[in-house]
Image (cartoon, rainbow, N blue to C red; front, top):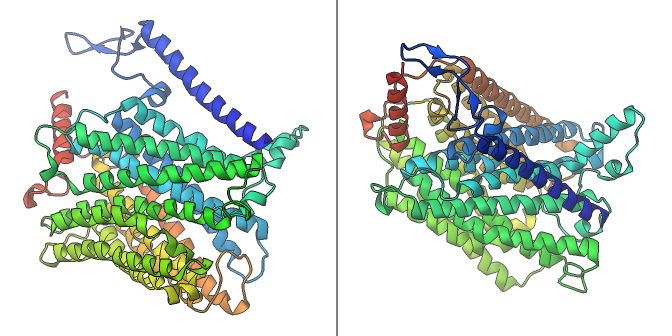
Length: 585
């Protein structure tokens, strides 16, 4: 109860702070004080100290109060990048512990907390915010719209994420704060009581209901808050696509990225409320003595049904925007349009529908009715078909194309290859006899990460390079980018292939200790993980240095898209911006 109340107080304080900031800004704006800027004199000089009203506030207030879709898109991208680096650090710490068979680095409890926070961070606060950031920035441009349909709701949806992230990760943050206070002679029992959660990201009951750590309650509130933010963003995207399209944009010429974001938003609206309801029931069980997930009530299996009804559509919430980005970017560097565009759209819509009929394949070993297991196996096998349609369309697009191995293209091609590996291994897991043998082994970890790292993260990297000239007005270091791309491909294979082998040999996942005969394979996987970490550092360095010192883009067509007739709306908008910048010089 104390943690529940503390969480509510924390949310109230955060929202109050944001409200006060907005009120202060409104007073400043309505007071007519304007901002100190330099305005042009008639002779071309500057009139210093002139007070004029600017379109946007200056400095920090601009980013705290903005409702511009491009600004909010950048905020999402920055937030997602920070979350990815933090979650990636969790992953590096996990692999460090697993370098040896004994528990001799972090300890079992810390290890359990690491893979818990790693999962929450990467799934809820990295992938979805990054793709939402790209959607916020580019969808209105691609749709020829002025902004998102609900700009203020758009801003609120973003600003709910940082406090939600803080609440999910509060166990570590409060521990650091408590030790800092203790160093100056102040001991806070409340802060020490909030330990990093060790439930696993699936929050399975009865462990999640019986764990005494009050941080679990704050974690659940944080997840619920992030779900509200995600649903608000999804509604905004849906309404924008349906109502804000320009005169020249109709359903027949809608771009593939918009189609995938539209489908993803539809999945979010049906899936995330289920997570929110389940989280609230779990909170009630933990704090108010209800019996939703005890044996006398719905039982632990009820939690699995509710969680995975959200959890497996969540996989497609993560992967569909990535598939859309690959479908958008790959043709640009193949010198031809996407082959079978309509079938790629239909396959996207089919995945959106079928994603809600496969959740129980996570539960083949729970003893559910064999007839139900068989039906879920069939649907799980069926959902592989639309994914295969996309893969063959990508391959055909490249088959007679003129390939240019730029960094975005390398990430797309590498991502497709790794997606095939992850997808085929997923088909094996869809078979009940195979899944019974491999369930909860490292095989599942390897399969999932071939998808998450191999196509989802790679699509994000490809988009960051492809749209970097638009986002920053500069060009990145192409040699460094290609180096990062190749290292990332090698890193994924070296990291996750040994996991597939260990899983087939029967090694269970989620254990800090393991038999010594698996040590060599674990060390190979750890070496691959650190190679991935090094590649990520190269990306960060490239982004920061190129933003500061990269060559200024003066050609609105840096990828020669006009030559293949693929100079799409966002690049046309960029061309207009460059022309305006040139005229004002």
